[in-house]
Each structure stands twice: as C-alpha cells, then as structure tokens.
Length: 410
Length: 109
Ligand SMILES: Cc1cc2nc3c(=O)[nH]c(=O)nc-3n(C[C@H](O)[C@H](O)[C@H](O)COP(=O)(O)OP(=O)(O)OC[C@H]3O[C@@H](n4cnc5c(N)ncnc54)[C@H](O)[C@@H]3O)c2cc1C
Image 1 (cartoon, rainbow over the protein chains, first blue to last red):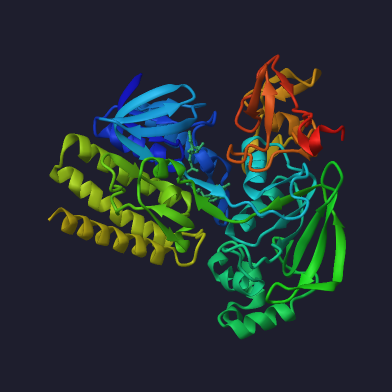
Image 2 (image 1 turned 120 degrees about the vertical axis):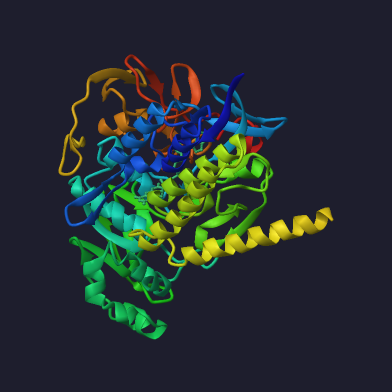
C-alpha cells in the first residue's frame, strides 16, 4: 500500500496546480494519471489569443510539471484509477497498486459527448478532440482533407489548429438535428450561440453582423438566405444551413452526404450531394467526467450551463463528503485557465484541511476564489454562454444543502 | 507522409525511430508516441474488427474514454492503443471477428 497526505486523480491543469499549492503547504502529495505524459487536455491546446501571441498548452503543461516536481510532488503516470472508497482514510485503487490518503482530489476533467451519425464507426471518423491530440501532441495528421460536424468553440479552435498543420478542412457543418437527443440544438439556436465565439470567429461575425443574431426572427432569416458556399473563417467554410446525414465508405471514410436544412433543422430532401474526404471529425460537446465522484457518494445536480451532472461543491472546492475535493472541468466545462485557478484553490483547501486554519491560508484562499471570478470575466474561450449563471446555481445549491443538513442535525 | 515534422508554431520535432510489429508485419514508430499514433503514421486506420459484426474499427476519442481502439499487446488483450506507448519490438495484434456458435440457434451462418 502506498501512502500520501493528498492523492490527486488527474495530472491536467487542475490536478497539477492543486498539487503545487498543497506541496507548498508542506503536504506529501501524489498525482495519478493514466496517460504517459502530464498535462491532460492542455497538451493539445494551441490558440492565438492576440495577434502573434499563442496559448501553447504543451509549454503550459511543461511549466506546471516542472513546478510540481520542484515542489516535491510525486507524479505517477500510466496509472489508471478504477475505484475509490472511504474507510478511515481514502483508498484509491489503480492499475499500479493502491494508495491511501487523508485528502482526495478528483480532477478527472471532461469527455466528449458522442454523436452517433450513420457511418460513424468507419475508421477515419473520430471525435474532434482526437484530431487535436493526433495533430498537436503526436504530430501525425488525421488525414489530408476532412469534414467537421458540429459548430462550437471547440471545433472552430481545432479547425484552425488542423489548418496550421497543413490539413485541409472541406467545411464545418451542423450535426443532423434529432429531437430525441436532449441537448441538441437547432441551427437557429447554434447561430444564437455564435456570439460566444466572437474571439474565434471575428470575420464570420463581421459578415453576418452580430446585431442580426440577437433575435430569433432575424436568425431564421439569416439561415434562410445563408450563402450556398458558406461563410468562411480563416478560409474554412462554415455551413449553418447544411448537415451531414451519412458518412460513406466501405472499410474507411471516403466522404459524406451533405443535405441542406432549414432553421429548425429539417432536411431538404431535394438538396443533397456528396463530398469526398478522407477523414471526418464529430463534436457533440463536452461533459464533466464525474463517475469517481458518484462512486464516492457525492450528491449531484444537473446544471446544463456547466455541461451536465455536477458533483455538489462550494467555491473553495469542498464536496460535502469528508476529505473529498473537486477541481477543473469535473465541476463544469470551461477553459484551462479556470481549471488552473480552481486547482490552486483546491490545493490550498487541502492544505487548510490538514494543517488547520491560519490568517495566511485564509487570505490566499480568498484571493484564489476572487481570481477565478476575474479570469472567468476575462475568458476568451467560453464553452457555454451562461456559465456564470451555472456557477451561481451551484453556489445556491450548496448553501441550501448546508442549511438543510444543519436543520436535520437539530 | 503524414507526420508533421515542421510546425509553424510548435516548431520542429526529431525523435528516435524504433521498430514494432502489427500482425507480424514490421513497422516504424517514433519513440514516445502511442500505438495509435504510430499506426496512423503508417497509414493504418483499422485497429480491430468488431467481435460480432466483423466491421472495421479505428480510434474514436483518442484520450482513453471510448475503448474503440483496443488491441492485443504482447499477449495482453483489451489494451487501449491511444493510451499505450509503443516500444521497440512490441507485438501488436488486431482483434478479429469471433465465432458466434450460439447465435442463430447454433446453425452455421
Ligand atoms: C477533447 C477535449 C479537447 C479540449 N480542448 C480544449 C481547447 O482546445 N481549449 C480549451 O480551452 N479547453 C479545451 N478543453 C477543455 C479542457 O477540459 C480544459 O481546458 C482543461 O484541460 C480542463 O482541465 P482539468 O485539469 O479539469 O482536466 P484535464 O485536462 O482533462 O485532465 C484530466 C486528467 O485526468 C486523467 N484521468 C481521468 N480519469 C482518470 C482515471 N480514472 N485514472 C487516471 N487518470 C485519469 C486524464 O488522463 C487527464 O490527464 C478540451 C476538453 C476535451 C475533453
């Protein structure tokens, strides 16, 4: 049995940032991650924040890793966690043995929602994140020319990354609209969300005119009179009036069937054609990877603004379960900078849990919680336009929970 | 060639070449990459054939969540190609369609 004061599951931006803070509080910290490199989803990220200024996730990951190692953190890679349990202390079962700890931080990040489109099991069809990791982490292209299904901040950012690596993008399309999928949006709703992508798609918004996107009627008109060739961003055509109904190929992807649609997502049977490509990326959005929190017995709430079911937590990253903390995308889908500051808060909270309170730690915690709000307000990438509202909902739910459990005790 | 050796922002990479085997055929990989990346760089996209239907499957999520890329590595089955580092001399096998003697009343298909 291995032992530490703090075990952290996930070496992404949240987990590594937390590890650094806890270690600086003097705690013995072990970080577990199943991938062979530290950094989590940071590794694939490459965004131009301002002209010529790049957010290079690999550099960020290297910096965090170095800081963590220099602070005395133990990092175990290639280690998959498959069970956690609270006995006297937390017990974490992994592919490489068992760890025991006083505090446990879940920083497992997010996963991509699958979108089952006809033909999606063909080799050459992959999630958009898969293409990002292949291209930027492994430096292997997913193909020569591809179609992207799903118009959202992630596909816009990754389309640009693929283009930088010399991969041609035939176009970005709306997913086939299916009422039965709860979280699906109509083309009109997706267009409404374009405002949140202002940073990634400035030329698109300039052409459509963001003022036109404000009300439903003008949005419907915008789709009705949408240019047949699509409007382009960085030379990549974006099609708000078309979907991919079927991915074709026998043993590998050979192309896709494109169909025109109206603002409600209904397919126009008479306007269908075929495009030849050698890969297809699908994006159904991101959701928090929360299974371990469920195993630990943490209560959950469905908060769509945060990306799905979220483990109950407060602003200092405590859950109601003794010694269990959360940070990063497991608490809601946001960019890596938010994950980092949440990690710092969680690291400090664990320091406080083990060492007891002090003026210094309270001040740092207060500062870190404020930093999170500031970074959110300045964020260039936002996965959900109402994320702030989602965070406020969670805050209220926590307060109610505290009140109710206090009442139950009396 | 589908390797990005010179990237406009990320710069150049030069990594050591190593050899491994897919279904007993020799392939080259770069040290430090995953089995999935090495196979894609060799233009191989089919990582297994579905147990029941026999349809070809490749990577889907590439970050360990979906288990679509499971292969046999040095005798161990169900290994995720996207999470496992390729090593010199490694023997990787694609999973093949399995017999289904109890389906369709035990009759030959
Ligand atoms: C496919 C994908 C692409 C993304 N691209 C971008 C982008 O381009 N820009 C952006 O701003 N945001 C992006 N995001 C959002 C991203 O989640 C955040 O930016 C940030 O990386 C979240 O940090 P985190 O530390 O919470 O989790 P992550 O960075 O996801 O790190 C979690 C880590 O936990 C490990 N882990 C999970 N479960 C286990 C387990 N059971 N056992 C062991 N280890 C485990 C994982 O291997 C991973 O390394 C993306 C998310 C996904 C899923």
